[in-house]
Length: 200
Image 1 (cartoon, rainbow, N blue to C red):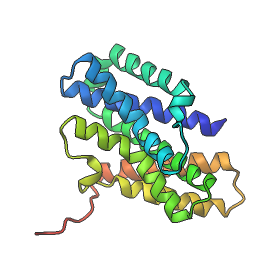
Image 2 (tube, rainbow, N blue to C red; image 1 turned 90 degrees about the vertical axis):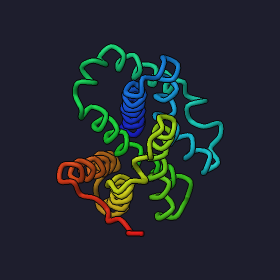
Image 3 (tube, rainbow, N blue to C red; image 1 turned 135 degrees about the vertical axis):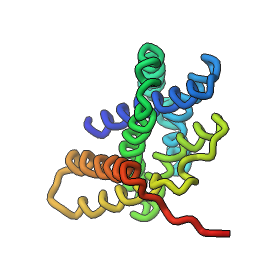
Image 4 (cartoon, rainbow, N blue to C red; image 1 turned 60 degrees about the vertical axis):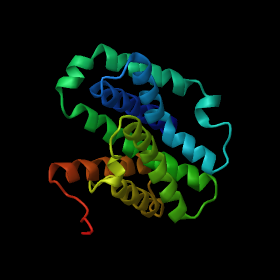
C-alpha cells in the first residue's frame, strides 16, 4: 500500500514539475498537458518496457492518468502562487526524483535483476521523464549538466540495498531511501555541489 502511495505521490509531483516547466515556456494548453504527462509517466514507461512489463503501468491502471490530470488542474488553479515561488519547480521535481528512484529499484528486484542493474533502472525511471520534459521545452536535460541529479538516484539506490540487509521492514526502507535521494539533491543545490567538468 505504501509502495503504491509513493508511486502516486511521485506521479503527481512530476506532473506539476512538467506543467511548470511548460508554463515558463509559454506553451498552449495542449502542450502544457503533454509535457506534464510525459514528465510524470515517461520514466515509468521506459522502465516497464525495459523489463518487458507490457502493457506499461499507466495503460492498465487509469489511476495514473487521473493523477496526472489532477496534477495539471492543481497547477492551473495555483499557477500564480507556484510561479512566484522559484523553488516550486525544483521541489516537485526533487520529490518525484526520490520516489521514482526507489520504485524503479524495487521493480528491478521483482524482475530478478542484478542490484547494479536495478539501481540503473531506478535512475532511469526517475530521470527519463525529466529528460523528455527538458528536450520538449528546448533545454539541455538537467541530468546531462554538472548538477547532482542522477548521482543522487544512484546513491539512494545503493542505500536501498544496504538497508535491505538490516532488520528494517520494507515500508521504512522505502521512506528512508526516498528521503536520502531528496536530501542529497537538496543539499547539492543548497551548497552548490557539482560534478567536475572535463576540460576540452
